[in-house]
Image 1 (cartoon, rainbow, N blue to C red):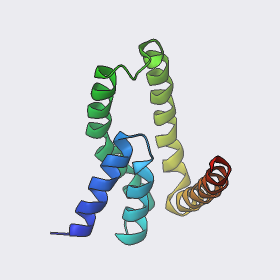
Image 2 (image 1 turned 135 degrees about the vertical axis):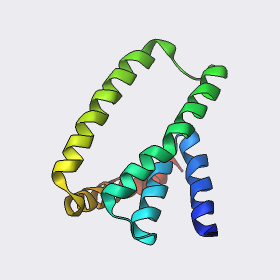
Image 3 (image 1 turned 90 degrees about the vertical axis):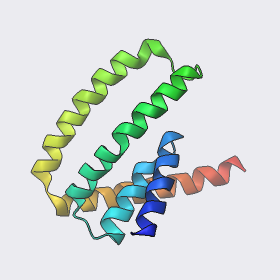
Amino acid sequence: MNWIAILVSIGAGIAASMGLGGGFVLLVYLSAVAGMAQMEAQWTNLLFFLPIAGISLWIHCKNGLVERKIILPMAVGGTIGAIGGVFLAGMLGDVILVRIFAAFLLVVGIREFFSANKQE
């Protein structure tokens, strides 16, 4: 049993359910540590988060934390974006996806670093 993978998945699930980017944690682990190809890591990440998203949505709705009037437009837009993203990722391939993901992580990390310093 791989205890590191279990701990990473628990941490990613907790972060994702709070809206803190658990997908980043899981994708970085799968691609950088576990040596999984970027496309395979992304598919695994998506499958991993389907049940987490459903449970989180149910709990947040129950607690009155979801604006119900925007759910349908957001779900339609997200579905269209996901379908487009699948086709785009298939056309780009692993090498370009890794570079795009790395650049995205770098930009988000830099942005968060400087925005965290402004909030103190």
